[in-house]
Structure formats: structure tokens, C-alpha cells
Image 1: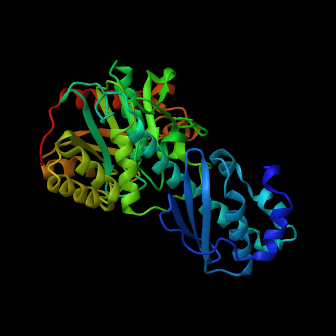
Image 2: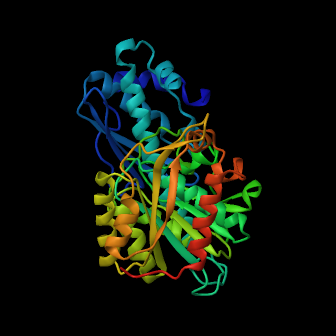
Image 3: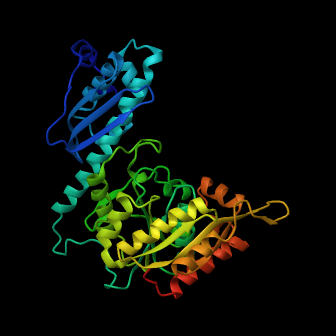
Length: 403
């Protein structure tokens, strides 16, 4: 970073605020309010070769102004890799004397800049894709004959029910049966697939046939794509509105070089907001849904809304999975009902959709996910892994039912 920290940077301090105000035709934009209440917004222009202009606004204190201005000045003209690597110490060194109590202003400015950089990269990647001339169709979805690939949206009415855990373990269970499986994470604000598969530092590559998914040879060649792969740091916030989310989801569904797949499993965020709606609209009648709930009523009520969402979107429901149906003691292996029981099966009966099965609350499942070692692979011989395999087999065998 040294080449960006010469005397011109020190001079910049006396010219604050620099690069203040929005940029027209920006390629990347993000806005975030920090814990102190200050709001910072960044605009970037550029492409895959680097950042062109950078601008900011803030309603914060003078130190927020100084920090954001310095970050904007430093990243102008930078290659994308250098901008991603720009760290708090780099900015503090350039600022010189800066109050210890105000260092959070630098942290906030960097977070917003990195979020704007992600938005720029998404737009730049799509521009590169449009310029590719290979004599083939513009669609890069895959080479699977029409109607052969099944796309399964794993959904839940609320967060915290273990939806992503179910999505990962079902995808691996299908892959272990010899099917060609892709797993895509469209939870824009909380992508958890990289953590669950131990993929903390993945670089997304663009090739002539599209964006390259991560292929996990040790997990039956499971192919994976997630927004988390595009973040510089796992805890970077994603401050995006609906249109940008829709653009990213379109890329993941249409521009990723999945190759021929038997199944594409989509891990959706909870609820029925922008992301599930965008997926359902883009896939039209091609998607099917698996709904994840916990036994208690507060969860099943929300899943009922998801069923009605599927009805409105004319999306078939493959069935309901009841997760955390009982606690499995790691010592005696006895199962204790922590929540009320039977909520998932009762909901399935009420709405006339299949009940796919119950997954108990086994501590090993959460520990495996946090360690990036999928449960059904790490404990392949366990009874719970067998339950996941049974559900995967049922998904393969059962025709979907339109609710």
C-alpha cells in the first residue's frame, strides 16, 4: 500500500472535505449507519481494472468527515485488489494524528467503501460477461436439457430455524447419491454457506463460459456459489436495495457456469421478501420449494405464510421439514422435546403437503456447521445423517404437489 501514501496524502488532510458529494453514474454505491449514529455513503466508478473516482457523504462529526474523505482519496485510481486490502492501519497512518476514541470512524468508512466495492464488482462482472463473444447463446445457465434439472428453493418463514443447515446437508446428501448438485446462497445480507463449508477466502473467477462456481471435490463435486465469496471480510455489511439484489440473483441463476446439473439447491433468506420473490419470478414454473420449520407455533405460523407465498407464485411445495424436533443428549443419546412437538406434521396435514421428516436438535450438527465440516459427511454413519439421506431420497422420488 506504500505507493499510495506519499506526501500528497498528507496534503489531502488540509483540503478536507475532499471528494464530497454523490457521483453521477456510479458503478458501486453503499450506505451504512454506524453504532455511533453517523451515516456514511460511498460512490465508486470503475471496472475490473480498478477504481476510477470515489466520493462520499456523511452526516457525522469532523472525524467521520476526515476518515471518509481520506478513504475516498486513497482508493481513487487503485486496483481492486489494493482497495480490498486497504486496512484501518493504512488509513490511520495516512491521517497521522487521529483520536483513539474516533477510530471507529475509520472502521465505518472502510466498511462502507468495501460494500460499495462489492457492488462495483458485481456490475463490472456483468459488463465483462456481456462483452464475451463466443458464438453461443447468451444464456450461461447450464447445458442440461430443458426440464431435466430440478431447482429446489429451501425456505423458512422466520430466521433461526436451521434452514441453511438443512440446505447444505440435503445438497450433500443428494450429491452423495451420485447426482450432480449445485448449491447457491442467495441470502444477500447473511450468507452462511461459506462458513458451513469452510470456504472463508474464495475468489470468484470469470471465464469465457461464465462465473465459475467453487467445486468441492471432497464433497462429491458439489458446486457452490455465494455472495459471501465476494466480500473482502466475512463481517462486511451488504447495504443493498432491491434492484441490486435482483441483479445479483439474476447473475447467480443465469451467468454461473454450473455445467449439467441434476439438482440446484437454493438457500433463501427467511421470509418472503426480495430474494425469494426474485428467485421465484426469474425461475417462473421451474422452481419447487422445501419449507423448514421448528415445532413451536411461532415458527409454523410463519411457514404458513411461506406456503401461501408459494401458492401465489404457483410454486409447487415438495414438503415440510421439521428441524430441532427434540434435543439429543450427547451422553445418553436420549431425545427430549425442548419445544412443543408435531408442529411440522400438523402444518403439513392442514395444508395438504407432504411431511418430509423431523431432524432432532443434535449439538453435533451445529458444531459441524461452525467448523465447516458438513454433518452428513462428518458423521455419515449416524442416525441423523440417515434422516437427511431419507429426506433427500424422498425429494428425488416424490412428485411435487401444488398447494
